[in-house]
Image (cartoon, rainbow, N blue to C red):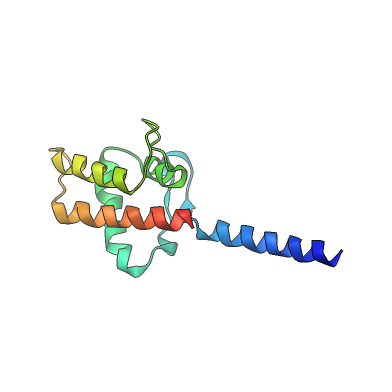
Length: 120
């Protein structure tokens, strides 16, 4: 009986730590976005930039779902670090994105951070 109790506590703690590793999200549907509370100060400026630049063409919901599931919601293609880099290059080439290389690099680094945190 004692073994089952120890096993149950262990499973609860492992499950809790996995749940806490995920990036926190606020809102639902079109209002869904990453919670600024869980973002380290080193990424705050990139996050603010992403909130301004990326929502010109799509909602943050699309980005949140891609990070959480590892799949781009529209195409179903994998959303990993390689895909994030490819999306960054695509945004750099878009004439209406109004983003420079530094801004895109900062957002790519932030998205890679989100992917790393979500995989813990």
